Length: 477
Image (cartoon, rainbow, N blue to C red; front, side, top):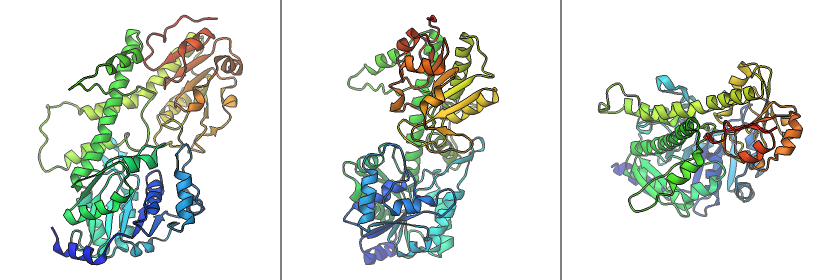
């Protein structure tokens, strides 16, 4: 424990001015909640004025959220704190020198998962910007999901090199991973327990001071920086594993000709002391920034560990295998599409496919690493025509997103539901069939959105994830 750092922090006094680097799904709601607290005077949101994301600066400073989709309370809170002069977005990173604490919420994808090589380019740039303007007594917190030992290693090294200061002596350094889900960002930050890990006790205590005012139901759980890094990567890895278990069960149920949702209900019904039967939902695939890569951060952390791993010889990691299962689900959707078209006498080549949903999660515009993309690539490579509808996603590289669902469905040979947007739960089979103009239309449900019997009775060929009881149904003309 550094007495020097403790003395500096005591002399500096309470945290009043906060900075947040990264104006995305994590940074914007976090900054707004910091700004809404009477414990803090001002929050600066830092955003590069780039061609791709510079537009966020003016939007935020108007009190308008760049995040589309349903985010309860966010737009109202943003306007409130911006109008009050407590939240300002700026591209001027030199203003970091004004702050008492700064957090970094920057994406950390993998350039090559097989080689366990993360792309820390953007994160390193953010850390360097902080290091250039770092002052004694400041708190630096990494919120990005990172490979275990990154805070104590790479981040510390860059900050010390750029600033000439020493972590744990001149400034505080911690990891406090975000734990949010799109569609409930504000609520998650306020109600979920907050994992806080400093490189030493003064750093941990200072980070606890930062986050405590924004928690309404959640509590702070302090630990070491590396333990916090493992906690975040492991909780996402476990969720990915649970989804993979549900997906594999769905594939089994299809092979055995039964309904996975009946089986899931049965499993979930077993309750009692000492019994845990948590089972998630199967679907068309896993997307987003977190689950698609956090397993690899955890695996890489083991390779950077201080001890040799004791594990069954030549056995594949169950976590990596789970990733393979979840990555397979868009392929399975493609296979279902091919099989359904074959039942109506059509080949995939030359067919028109209407994809409903591009975002990876329902009622959101979050389209990071969506399972819809590999499906799209397979469809196009097979020589089919594809049109995509999504009510929330405004644009995406190399694909046109349409807002008129009727236009997308019109004349299609197959309608494929990839996202559980609420707009799709009200699909009417008669209306869909009129739009397709086909005597026998095809519908593929990747999210258990529609009632199979309703569409089958209307003359559709139906296939759905885990619906072995219906995937070979009699065709009704």
